Length: 202
Image 1: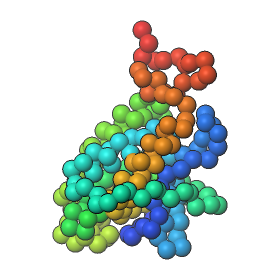
Image 2: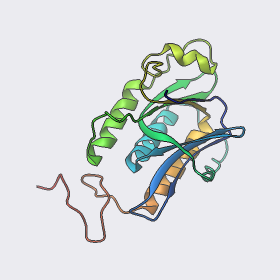
Image 3: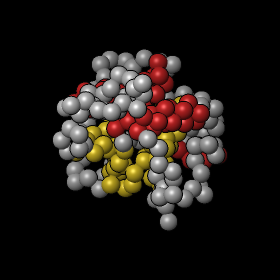
Image 4: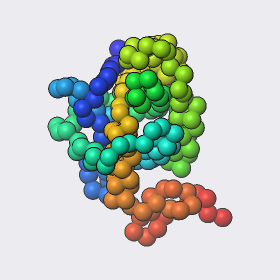
């Protein structure tokens, strides 16, 4: 049976990595009280999510005061599952950004790394909405089939984060990207010490 997580008031929301550059494993993590949930992500997914959250924040009231640093990952890491897709909604009444994280199921088709960012951004663009039910409580989003599917074969996690947490995530993601291998300016794939084969090269 798929796992469902409801983090309605997280005290902890962050991204982080384990391992050296070139072999890093990326994680998304949230916690409410003593409950900590950790999801494995691809580097490109972290970058795409940060890019989209940055755009969402640009359309909302500015965060007041300096943005606090996103926290480090809480260890030991207990991976719930690997992220397949992400939906975003904005609950302006509750001043929350809602992330709906879907588990990657085994029979989903694989995509190349250079297509993954475009696909995730397209998915986020298709799912982001301000049109939420009047009830700002967490269960209010159940009626939106695009964001929450009780019949999904994989797990689903719903995270209601603050604008401050979203801004901190964007900053943390930027730090994580800068510490990894440089990205090719043409295809966005990481370059090795001797460069790489660029799929967009003529």
